[in-house]
Amino acid sequence: MTEPSATFLLFGATGDLAHRMIFPSLYNLLADGLLPDDFLVIASGRSEMSDDMFRADIKDSLPKFLPADRYDAAVADRLAAIISYQPVEAGNAEQFSALARRLDGRLDRGLCVYLSTPPSLFAPTAQGLAQAGIITPKTRIAMEKPIGKDLASSKQVNDGIGALFAEDQIFRVDHYLGKETVQNLLALRFGNVMFEPLWNASAIDHVQITVGETVGLEGRVSYYDGVGALRDMVQNHVLQILSIIAMEPPARMDPTSVRDEKVKALRSLRPMTAETVKTHSVRGQYTPGAVGGQIVTGYADELGKPSDTETFVALKAHIDNWRWQGVPFYLRTGKRMPARQSEILIQFKPVRHSIFGRDGHGSGLEPNTLIIRLQPEEYIRLLIMSKRPGLERQVHLDEVSLDVSLTAAFAGQRRRIAYERLILDLLAGDQTLFVRRDEVEAQWTWIDSIIDGWKAAGMKVSPYASGNWGPSSAIALIERDGASWHD
Image: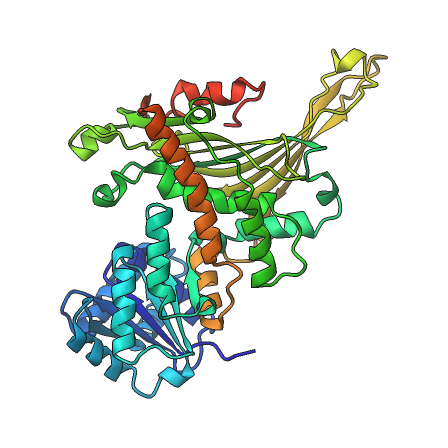
């Protein structure tokens, strides 16, 4: 096994993501002794500042984003001591040369470049690194989403990076894949003999995936408008969850095997058309309302102008393969929802024949349901039927839950930031939890079919009051099939 990279070069180091997630993750990894010896972080941004100024900024921000019982000023000092700051702007050859001098003598021990910048800067930044002689076979590059805004622009971004880096050097980040509960989907499916035989169209009626946010634009006005919920959430987070649920068992737990099976599932998604989007999709936009007891404004008010950008989307998807033929996947995500919630529901079919009264009527018989909560709580809940205690001759059944709280089961384990796992894997060169190019392009191919369908059908956003689970048409989307969203 290769030695982990000894240098971490972060572009966009003055940004929000770096302060909220990346530096707290580096702090935790350092505190736990998981970073290589002589590790160096080079932070880069467009702002001019000295090493000491940037270090002071990071030390000031760490207590804001770390739990109080986790923060230790001595560890913060240790982290600050291994950080250097180098201003670099794409296209400025002199600044890239200065960066190369900072890296002198370190490149042969491995360099990880992390791009926490707009995608328009990915290729120019990589070109600047190449011209300064910074890219070697031991250089890896990680890119934050979005990787383009459609299939064509995604290919353009990937071509720009792929011209300078081999695919095994490129790490496309989807932070959902760093979450313990998302990784646990693999363990649940392939580490337990009772689930995999039932994980198909013969036993499963439908699947629901919900990713709800209570926040609105939250300072993302310039990015979000014109992008919307479909591109911002479904194209990456939701489809990555879907691919893990729907994938075939990989031959082994390695990057190639796992990602081969995920991309097969994504390529099996049935494209939408101008006709099917009318019955298989809902676009919504939040209006004023109340979330968590607080009055909030509508999207257009926050934006300061009318907009047709969707802040909510619900979809009925089909995967056309042997395992899932005829099983609908209901997907929904939105802002200003009643709760921050990421959840998967597997609805099993009813038993084929009920012995508890005719068709089960009067007995309380219900199909089994598996609920996997990813956030904010982390649990797996299986709803099964049990006999109600009593002496009646007629058997009455009640639904009871078998609960596994991952938070309680692993109470002694600290809940880690998803980026901790991803940074460690990046340093080690393990691509399992990163997205391959053909995955991204399979995702965009399906998303583009929806966007094209919306345009052809002239579908506009439907209003929904903040604090609700989207427009009423989202309820109709699933209830037409005799099912209901799990709220």
